[in-house]
Picture (cartoon, rainbow, N blue to C red):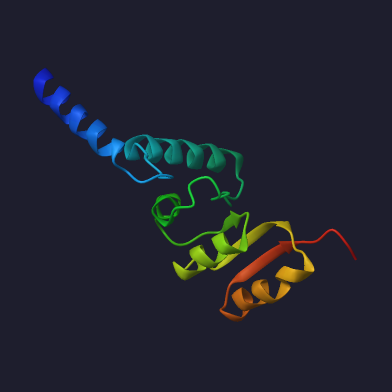
Amino acid sequence: MTDTAVRDANAAIAASLETVPTPALILDVSKVDRNIARLRAHLAQLGTGFRPHVKTSKSIDVARRLFPEGVGPITVSTLAEAEYFADAGFADITYAVGLSLDRIARARRLVVRGVRLSVLIDTI
């Protein structure tokens, strides 16, 4: 690719980025894939499991890159995130926020759908 072509491509990307409704997740997919591969290799060396927190990306596409062979397990910060990922087939989810009484029914609906939902509580 010539310098002019690279400049034109970068200008087109910049122009389209200026029109993206925010908030928006914009990633360099090659960097994401490299980082995932590096993380997986490191975890394999340690002999440990992998349950990423998906609160930052909140993206099915990113989660699928994390688990090309399946769907999870994952960790979320909200029940809305849990529902979103459950809708995409993720069925082993940890809700990493203390479960309050007013959220039990909503959490139960996920379990009834077949989600293995692990929750935290801070009271007997």
